[in-house]
Length: 475
Image (cartoon, rainbow, N blue to C red; front, side, top):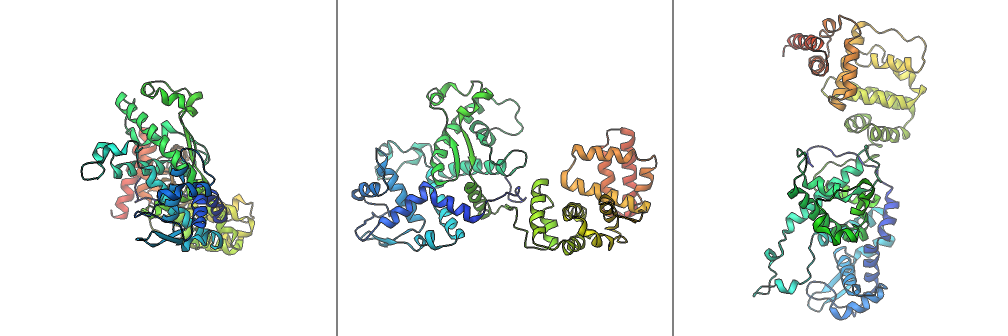
């Protein structure tokens, strides 16, 4: 992912609902319980962790039992410290007290609760990037330091790998081509960060890398599920027992779930968006333009997919009186800059949601050079009476504006290719007339038509017209 272009807009659940989800996650609820359990007699070591003697009592306070009880209690304590639920008063004596953020979990706003959860999430993500340290004592050198080279572990590379996987999972969740709540097969997610995009059939070496990545991700997603970031169906244990033979084994569609399935939860989507914005990405969310002006709405939704653009526009309209909203949208749609055609397309789509009450605003711009064609289309579609016929110049101007907007929104799509073919078939003199249109995008549109039209003769006519238009514009 590049932080230079915006990510797809996401639809977040209300913060109050997400805060309730955060409070109910095992990681945060355990950390809060330990923070409330801690008292004057609680002691921590030099690193801030509970001393070994207190781990059994901490585990009991959390109703934990079994071989992993002490380790789970220790992890919960570490989260409590990192999230500000517990504060170390005296490092030498190892005394603690309740942290200021503990009160936020019961008395703070939903946003406050989510801020605490985000801190807990970072602790768990850091843990997820650490390999299984069983046999760690064998890796301690003569100076008492852990020999990381013997682990074959690069902490920075491992964190980047997990960030890349979670970033791809975010993109899949935010995209409109797949349902946001659809789980993603683990092999596909691993392949998305391992297999080069231009590779046809993966080599055996690449398949082995994907298999290794799946095993790493299986451990990592098991770690991340208790903090509420993901819902995870682990890899079938029977497959893991025979993992050395799996990379070359065919995966049947009916069996894909046995290889692991994962999806971001609504809380996880919120958390990933917060992390991406912290890292400098532009990560929009539907609804954040609702209290801004029409100019911000039209510019902000310019590159949104259709469904997200409509949802954002609907929220914007809900806060406004229809006629006033229509006038504001039309005013914001004016302009001769490169983004203006797409603004007018988004304006036209927004006006289709306003309804018949917008009619006076559309009639007010019938004589406007940039909006008159749009207004006539809207009025005709809504069955208005006495709609003046457009001049030929206005028809051609609107044609150029529409194609320019489609180019900006979709690029060289099949829909645009069909539109180009239809326009060229309207009458034999189309290109002889259209190059004269006084629109900043005329030459660019005609060049695009030359690229897109499948008929070589027509494409050549379009390129000739583009040359004439550029000469007319002096460029």
